Structure formats: C-alpha cells, structure tokens
Figure (cartoon, rainbow, N blue to C red):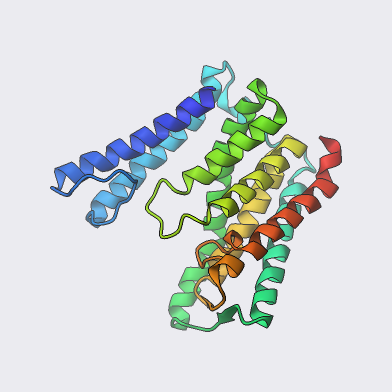
Length: 264
C-alpha cells in the first residue's frame, strides 16, 4: 500500500502548490487541479514543482523498500531483446487507432482537414514523438512500475489490476474536464496497460502501447473534426471513450494476450 500513499502525497503536493499560488495572487481557491488564470511564470513554477515531486516520489519508493532506484527500475526493463516489446506495442496501438479513424472517416463520423498554417503544423508535429514517449514513460513508471507492482505484492492479480486501472483512470479527472462519461474508456485503457505489465512483468510493452496511442492522438488532433455522435466516436481529446473505441481497446487487449499472455 506504500505506492498508494505516495500517490496521495503527490496529489496533495500538486493541490497545495496550486492553492498557495492562487492565494498569493488573490484568486479564488478551487478543488480541482488547474492552472487556469495564473500568470505564465507561475504556471511554469507550478509545473516545475510538480515535476520535481513526481521524480522525488519515484526515487523514494524503491528506497523505502530497501532497494536502490537503479536496481529497482532497471529490473523493470530487462533483457537485451525485450525492447522489441515496446516496438510491438507502439505498432499495435498505432494500427488499431489508424483502423478506427479509417472506419470513422468512411462512415463520416470524423473529417480531416488542414486548419492551421503549415509552419504551425510543422512545429506542433515535430514535438509529438518526444512528448508521447515522455508522457508514456513517466505515467508507466508511476502507475505500473510503482503502483501496480506494489499492489501485486499484496493482492491477487485480478484485484491489483482492477485497483491499478481504476487509479489510472481516476487520475485523468483530477483536473477540470468537460466530460465525465469518458471514464469507462480510460478504465478500459488502464486495464490494457495493467494486463500488459502483468503478462510481461516489464515496462517495455506498456510504454510502447501508451506511447503509440498518445503519438497518434496528438498527431491527428490538429486535423480532425468529429461529426458523429459522441457515444459512438468518442471525443476529440479521447476517442477511445466511444463505443467503437472501447471495443477496439478490448480487441487490442485480446491481441496482447494472444501475443504475451501465455508467458504470465
């Protein structure tokens, strides 16, 4: 349960930092974590503090368990050939999302069009690959490398995966969001990533799946406009939330089980 306590501490630090900055600038306090309304330098300060807190918690967890961070996290990236699992996951996530977008385009549930200048598009797209990899790596270190690993020591795999997936999904709603019906999609994504870690006992595959999904979503966002019903096609910020997206996540989970589940 140590990992859960550290996650709660991380949220408390993020909320406390926000509260102090809002109070210092005379703005009303808010329950959800949001930097809206703060001056740009204070937004940068908040992100820096939160990033340092995340890094500190990731480093503290193995130390409290009596293991050096290098040995602990190094053990989650085993084998000279295992990095191929990351490429497998990234390719699978990219293929599934491409097929989903193709189906939506053919049925006129989404439309692609250029909505920005070429210069702005190039600058935006150039930052997509490193951003996708960075997001996936840190989230997988936190939610699978720390949280799920710790849960598996105390609970059965089914309970550990359920709690781990629920915590991952809930984390996406700490900030103000326009939609809450997208939660089942985040939960299904959490189950996919948790099971991928359970089956391989490494972070290569979850990072690949996560990074591939973020890569495609960030890359298509400047071009896409949703025209179909939200319950079917999802939302622009998270297309996996719709019925088709949730079904695609289920099929992708089955695909990963067929490829890696036998080793669990």
